[in-house]
Image (cartoon, rainbow, N blue to C red; front, side):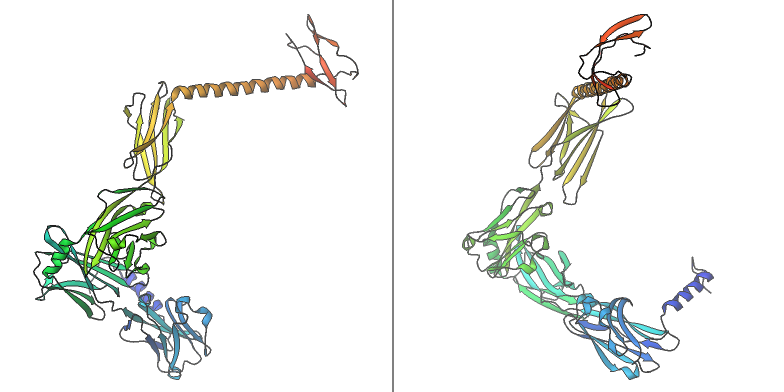
Length: 539
């Protein structure tokens, strides 16, 4: 007996019971399916079958086809001799059909139309009668034989020729390779694969050819499931090399700057001038597909456009007959920042020019806030948002000298713009004037805010005096209220103000008390009261 590390008898028993529970088979019958995966081509139909053993009628049983769970991803449910449509998943509505192959013998089939890459994977066929239930799984292998490869030729520096092989519509991910005229494999310079919205693969492989002789080079795309491939061959005649040398694409020599939210125009043109109306013109980023914009056969090819540029681009073709094209991009965002390539195609040969687009954001004016710390220091925080690229942040003193910050925090929001917070510690005893400066390194522009500790002290003193004045007024008001409540004099409302004698110990002072009688309870409201030297007297 062989012992495996970490494996015990109790673990073996637990695993055995787990297998029994997950077999999902009834003791009364079992279900079998195809012994091998079902091969289905993209766009074609496939048929799924399963059968009861021992053979018996399934007319009164429930038959269910599903993918992951019996209650989810349901393809089809047959119950009481009819289809249960309300349980069917939306993706399969109208795409599957119940085939009563030999229901009396326990054999059922389901036909699936218009196979898609998303149909690739495992399926379950389930039978249930009362409390007895059995099921089996089967596998669909989806394969798509895409377009034949198309080879593009491009020139580069130092006499090199760049060959780019592209194809689309393949599934699963295909294999790409190059061969020379003798069938020898050539080393691929770069390779790029991407899945489109339908799940099909686009491939792009690049080969660099140095000092190319006038011979043929082939590109092959191979499907590993179907074991089929498609190939294309291109020759490199001398005339094409001469054409590469004669045709040039010219673009901006300097990076283009554009502020976030503004529009920008990217222009490139042929040199010497040539009519580009019948050419393919392609604006791309890293790869040819998906593209920023594609112009072909006199029209825009929208299906090849990147999703983030749809509805935001337009091609200005006023000077197309002279080989000049301008791409207009509206409402630029941070994601538009980077390199672009403009490609013109003529007779299967591409020439291109690249340019850099620099998207910039000038953020908000800085705000400085202060916090007093327990040890007598002040902590200043300068904050601003809406910057791109990463801004330069500085504290400067009265002489313009840089003051090192205590810490700095940079965060990027969902739109890619930077929010900055920089902190500075200042001794509370010092009188300082500090400036917080935030600048954009590409624009050469900055925004500033200034902090003065003397202004802070003036503000703080004024606040203290204001609070003290409020407290004093409240105290005087409270004394007046108590004084007025102790007065209980019955006055004639028509009588003139009179003098009252207020006695306290040995002192007698006469004061004029001006009062107006209220409407009830003989209580007077005093409008003016002058009392001096009272300590414990009575009215």
